[in-house]
Image (cartoon, one colour):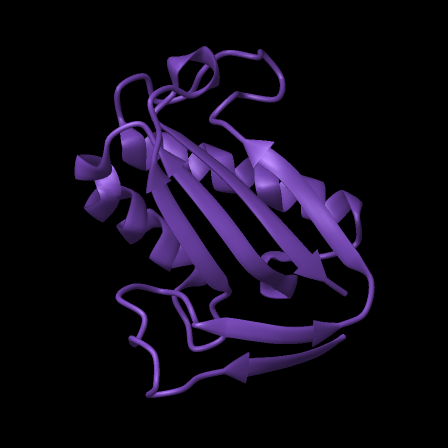
Length: 129
């Protein structure tokens, strides 16, 4: 995969662990939104705790990417959906543990009225390998 970070001072600098854009070539993998469900039990992980729910959502993304012979390092774009934007800092701290380096993907984060199973966070991604 060829991956190039795109940055310009002609647009706002990122305010978190993500880049303005990533140019990529190769096989694209579109991972559906993942919520914090335990894959073995189907139970919601971290009831009421957005940090725990973010960890599980990212663990689920990681497992799917591994099945596609990819890793989080191959992710070029994420979309994060929060039930409450007041949870942004807690979600962002966990997110940064996984995507917080200079090669972090581009990202969008929005508050939504409701998520499946009334969880606090859902994350989807696009990877290129």
